[in-house]
Length: 75
Image (tube, rainbow, N blue to C red; front, side, top):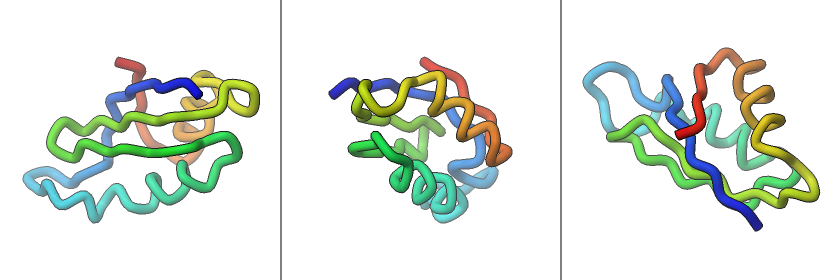
């Protein structure tokens, strides 16, 4: 298993830290084949993803998130 950390906009709305806004993308990530764990940090608008490198790559993760309309950058 590998881990990668991303800066991602949309995990929270401006001024909020509860993470309710980011639930749709987090659920989506958790449902992708090869994703083992998704650990969001709502204060820093970042997410750490543990994945199986034999099933999915960081490049594919970024592509799938962008397809859903979110901005994402590897930290």
